[in-house]
Length: 190
Image 1 (cartoon, rainbow, N blue to C red):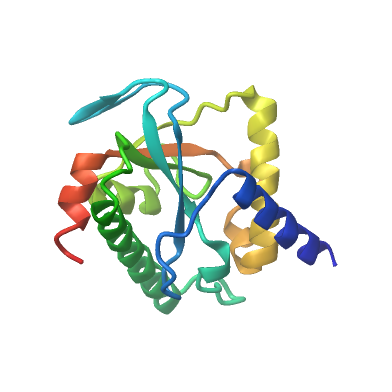
Image 2 (tube, rainbow, N blue to C red):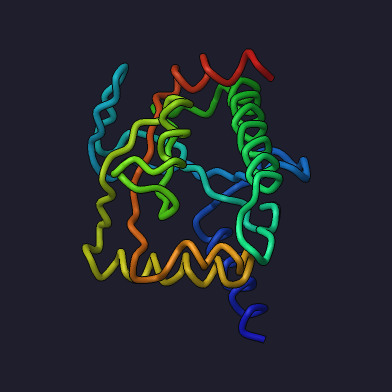
């Protein structure tokens, strides 16, 4: 019952925040949201000002490959990685087909990577994403509630992943890439 309530609430939040589906392929594990940047970000090839239009990536929880009960294994990691890369290519194609979407950068906020450079962060950096510390507009209390919500989503959609993502150890980070760099990296390989 609680899981169903959280699923319903997550659907409501997604609609309220105007998170949209850019590909209905079953292996697409990302959705997107256009919004204004809350703070400036310096990237190797661009500067994002507070207020600039950005595109935030959101995991599409219902499409994530379920983690085996024993925890992640190579087959799960490979399937998830291929789905993630394919999703980035589909997003680049979508942006190419919708030139009216004028954004300065693509990014996301996640509790899955750390600034200390865990293996997931290193993979994302190889793709071209730059990591910066997360700044919640609501401060530490806001971060706590965001982490609690993320932890409940893990419990509902991918319970085995909670083993490696403990509630009080979640550290949120931001990852960014300029739109031009994103399109250069992901459009031509579709």
